[in-house]
Image 1 (cartoon, rainbow, N blue to C red):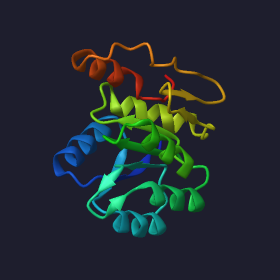
Image 2: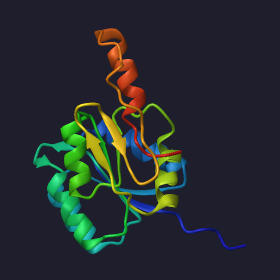
Image 3: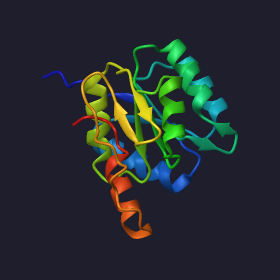
Length: 171
């Protein structure tokens, strides 16, 4: 019996606890992970290896990952690039999509991250995506996530609602 090839991803994350937790989660989902802590290391490793997906933190000690995303899109036009970041304002998400991101997952992700990454790997193709900064919705060629302007604006409920809207990858 021939076993399937394990997907291999590059994970850029500067926080050690997050890096270890995500590494373990993805390993349990059957995904091999190469982790790095800086944009410079991510670029060097990306040039030396072929990955099935790139998982990027948005803000790092050596800067933001938007330009790295654009550079990765140049060398790997068909590979999924996923932001996994606490930078979750509409302008941050739009910058990621403009740079070539396939998906944007908000930290902490409140689902099965391994299943989500496997689904992104299966989908493969990068949709055209736009963030509406006024209504906080995401549009691609197949799906619209409803406007968020009806959300209650109390501190207590706003965060709970936002946590459920920001992961944009279709199931």
